[in-house]
Image (cartoon, rainbow, N blue to C red; front, top):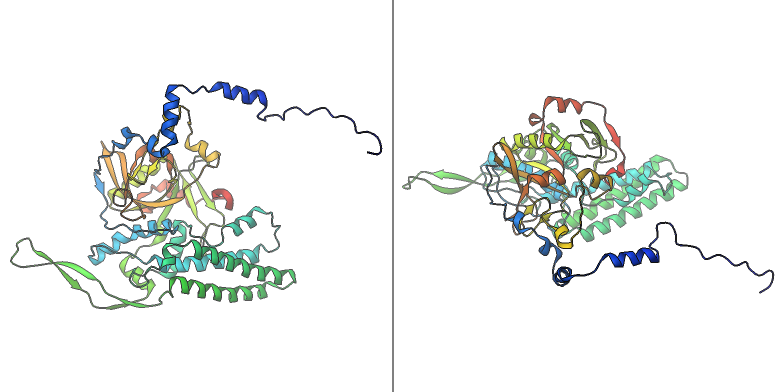
Length: 463
């Protein structure tokens, strides 16, 4: 070694807040596995945690009875597609079609709306690339745009915009395909296709080309997207003929009457006319109500950039106390109307038993630990937000107070209680985030809040 000898450095002490030797020694000393702990360890080592922690006492509360139930039949199945928001939205409309046409069961084509959803999302993504093309790649909005390119996820607002623009068709008119029900690979390929098209736009932008040329590149890209989606999902019809079996009671020797199938004549529809004639609802009359305890209540909010269709309204909501939301939901259910709603499905719900109850899985007793968190505290710590949508179709009242709610899921009739879930009222308080309800069930003072200038929430609020 040449030059001066390097000065000896003092050994650095443990960093502030690190797990130093004394701290680790104290942690070891704090736990001495006794006989009860050893029994816990032996059980836990060979068992599924959720099975061990499932509260038999809470499970036994479900008697399967509901004092009020919306008239609806059939359970849809999204399978391996993240289209819960689409199924929940359509489950608001299905009972109306069955009632109008006298059908025993009915399903809309999810492939039809999925096609337009992905086409609109692709257009929205490429529009975002054009708009933000000079943005720093570290910008948070740019990163969100490129993380959520054209996936399955969505909101009621997405379904509303799609139905208003494209209408609806029966499931038999545009049947499901493998990639309609298992979207993983299709979504990956579509995202890669759109990244390639976005790169074409950015290269041309870097050469100094004007926005008009960039949009021509986008138009050509959308032709490839349309082709890709058509080969995966089928070409959506612009018009179609449809007929159905209607159940009638025919008079005969049986005094009670017998059911006889009657096939209606073929009728020509467009998707828009089918929606108007079989559903006929003004979707803008439905409003979103949130329970977000991390934001002030009684305020109007808007999610920036939360839309799939360019030109559609961004998703907005009024934030209310949970008891106010439940009163509104009760009015809708008593009026025989389903309620699409969003939840955090990852906590205290059993798919096997079709149950949602606060503390359904008693991990605290199992492990001898405390995990007390309020809903507001979970929000503050960015715990998972509503990642699943379903429909409320019933309620069980005791002295006019809801005890539990009946839920229609979209996971098929082999899950839960033949496709239904029992949601106890305490779980509603803790894990329901938002509901979609017709304005006639919402108090006038709340509707007035929707007319106020909204507080804008950044695109990453829901991230």
